[in-house]
Image (cartoon, rainbow, N blue to C red):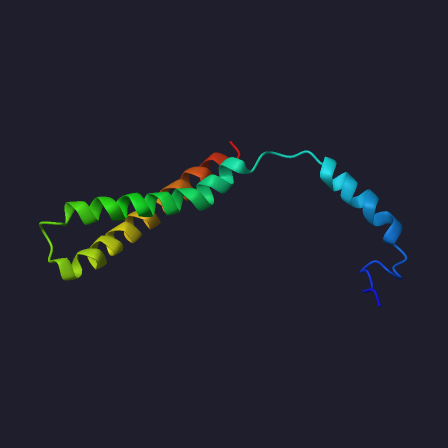
Length: 96
C-alpha cells in the first residue's frame, strides 16, 4: 500500500506549484556574505585566537591551565569581535 502524499485531498494542491515557482523567481539580495559573517567568521576567529594564545602562553602559564586560559581569552575576543561586527552592520542599516 502506497503512502499518502501531503497534498492528497487538498483543494489548493493545484496552486502549490505556481506558488513555489513564483517564490523561486523572487529577486532579493544575496545572503552569502551575511551567512559567512554570521557562521564562518566566529568559528575562524575563535580557532585562530585559540591557537595563537596556546602558542603565546606556552612559556607563561602552566601546562595544566594553559588550554583553559587560552579558551577563555579566545571566547572573550570572539564575542567582542562579533559584538563590534554586529554594531558596524547595525549602523550601516540605519537610514540617514
